[in-house]
Image 1 (tube, rainbow, N blue to C red):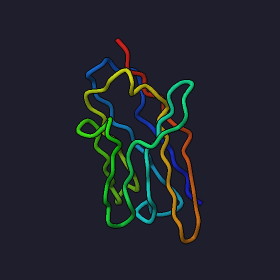
Image 2: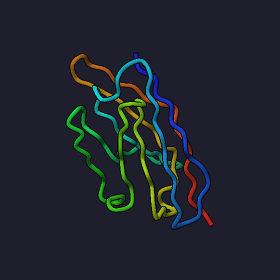
Image 3: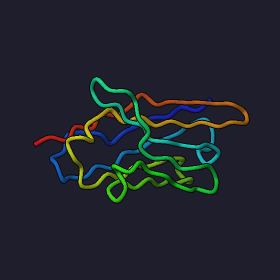
Image 4: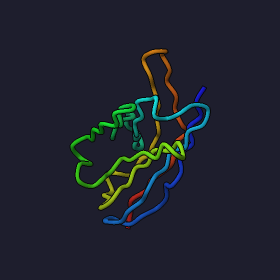
Length: 118
């Protein structure tokens, strides 16, 4: 069983920055595919960025490329999402997800709210 706890959300002006953290406990996060998702008000939850297991390959959706950076620190079992040049369209609850295929596992955190507004 893996527990995920997100933190770092808040209110920021357009053009500002935030760094989100996803702290894992119960198992080594490097074993999992870990993604950040976000859900804007009235919209579906959508994938933002993913880091793949031990190899650490990282993918981003087009709208955040060049602005967001996903990283991982295995020593503290935490995945981060550095968000720069934030836009009002980035306003959402951001969720951390960890999953594996063998054995099949899928875990979610409770989310952290990011509000980009002047």
